[in-house]
Length: 347
Ligand SMILES: [Ca+2]
Ligand SMILES: [Ca+2]
Ligand SMILES: [Ca+2]
Image 1 (spheres, helix red, strand yellow):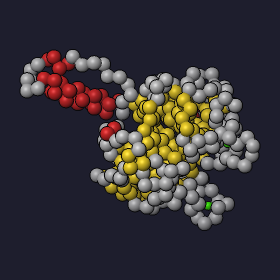
Image 2 (cartoon, protein in one colour):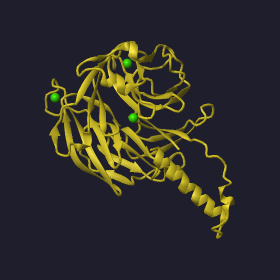
Image 3 (cartoon, rainbow, N blue to C red):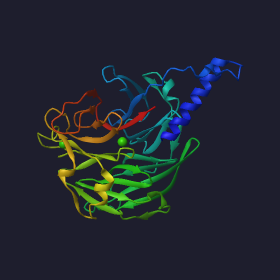
């Protein structure tokens, strides 16, 4: 990613330099550029109206946002590709991937038409994880017609031009929700449990098949995990805990999230079927947090900020100063009914 950003920055510099120097190609004054500021944006999807919000959190004291009006009425699993300036989500009303171009140019409230589309293969799409041109969607519908046996499907799409083509489908022997790539490995939370699974070299599974996770561990202190975010540069994993999903008076304030630093080492040293101890984690939860059902998460390692899609309370939340955990008050409280997914993009 860093290489891509550098290439993009250099090409922008080249364009700006060309514009400034006009026809003169030996003028070095084009390098007299202002320092590029880091722009931090959050992209969200939701199950209330299916629209996509872009929230500019570069300056947390002056947050700006815009809404792209989509034809979908419910969506999950959002992703932004900075190189093509396109945003993608898994439509739960159309049961397919959909993408929208020229995001930077679109003004808030614009009704957008689908520029990238896939076939409607899915039943209940949730999180999206991207690796190159491969877009993996977790589907949490029952596979075998018996809701008493846990299972799920991972739909592997390949993006080519404006189309997503279904390459193959992997069936899991557990219920799915959040998924994310760490290099070639795919991490998946085991829904309705406190467990985290990994599939090593996930995309090497090129045919329709049932595939067992390479390793599954329990995460102490979590009731029911749902969303996850992994940052490779800092080696930090963040897992959400939705507690009780619904039906009790505390279900909208019983959530939290866990931050696991030095994650690779801790995961590798936990045996298959073993438990990663609470003492190796930091937990954020409590009455100040507004965490009830945190269904998805993104992590900014540069500012050590955690972004949460909070479904029960209808919000996008952000937390910083997370190192000691506890009952933190969010630094961002952005209303988004039935928030389902959040994605971080820094440029
Ligand atoms: Ca089943
Ligand atoms: Ca809850
Ligand atoms: Ca996400």
